[in-house]
Amino acid sequence: MVSRVIPVDTFDLVIFGATGDLATRKILPALYRRDLAGQLPEGARITGAARTEFTDDTWPAEVRSVLDETLPADQRDTVALDRFLGRLGYVPIDVRGEAGWPELAARMRADVVQAYYFSVGPSLFGDLAQRLHVHGMNTAECRIVVEKPFGHDLETARALNATLAAHFDEHQIYRIDHYLGKETVQNLMAIRFGNMLFEPLWNAQYVDHIQITVAETVGVAGRGGYYDKSGAMRDMVQNHMMQLLCLIAMEPPYAFEPDAVRDEKLKVIRALDPVQPADIVRGQYAAGNGHASYLDDAENPASRTESFIALKAHVSSWRWKGTPFYLRTGKRMRARTSEIAITFKDPPHSIFGAQEGQKSNVLAIRLQPNEGIKLKVTIKEPGPGGMRLVEVPLDMSFAEALGTSDRDIADAYERLIMDVIRGNQTLFMRGDEVEAAWAWTDPIIAAWESREEVPQSYDPGSSGPEDALMLMHRDGRRWREVKP
Image (tube, rainbow, N blue to C red; front, top):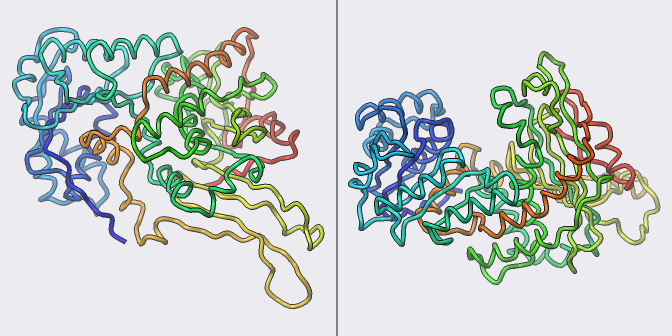
């Protein structure tokens, strides 16, 4: 199956921080792949803006060398690459000064979509917003894209929202969380709301529990200074995992429209109960397998920042009252995987008696790697000699079911950047949503900081601290295996 490519309107896109890691590793390759697919219109322009003294000639040459190094062989198309590089321009700019701003303003066309990507640290968001205002570039229809972190806590998130709101309306602000651009995350909504099969069962009466796991094999070396000030709770749970929880737990919106979807997600966040200390496990990876410990990577031997966290959350709503949501994320774990698993309750009575093969139905939604969906069901084992039950998966990977490979599936940034140009905020976070997430997260962090808790050590290449296993075991449940 070949996905449809719907061209977007002509646009001017400015990437602030164009020479940084995010721009070169994610944003520019995503834009090139959309151009390769035929989605960018003829008049689309992309302007890089940063402190580095590139020009309209030297920056495209730099981008060419980066793409040559990073693109797989089957995505290297000379004609498409020349066309894409022909769209690029560059303006050296001083974010907090005046240099470069008049030149940038002169390049913007009034009759096309204008978008500004803030691929910089949050400390510069306010300066960029103010400069765009001063130089008349914050037109009524322009859009700005801001990356996480959206604040460090509720207070800073409110301040950041207020700063942006001083120069832009909420409908112009696109707070990007790349998890929402993943094809399988969007398929979660399609499964729930496009099929009658699951919706009647999607509640506390039929669902035993839900697990959300985001495991990484990498440590924090190279970014330990940043990570040690945030930790797994701020870096993953407050944003990425919160969004996944919302999509699972939210009520059906009246339409697949930005505010309709985000209104329902906000209700979920506000319905989250406070998490009790006994329902949280924090950890730091130790040294081993040829890798340094978290303390060494963070260059802070006294650090109490967690590289792993597991917790049990509850949503106090009519649909989910009493159903636990188990969240787990960590660095230096056994495998790189992101998965949502909905475990349904056992039948109220087994006509087959107690058998080892009769297990709970599980709907597993795999976000990475090998995006796909798997439903585990119980069937009869083939052969004569009685009714013996076995568990088998009904497995759908995108590659097999749709005739695509992983490379054919659009990267999250590809989808999200095109949604910015279209003016579609459905897969972006709203300001009140961000603040509500921090309002739930802050007391949890404050509680363990007040107790001066030290995270538990865990072996690299494991599934996390032993107490994380006990978090499930004491409830008579087990974590799903972390595996590639």
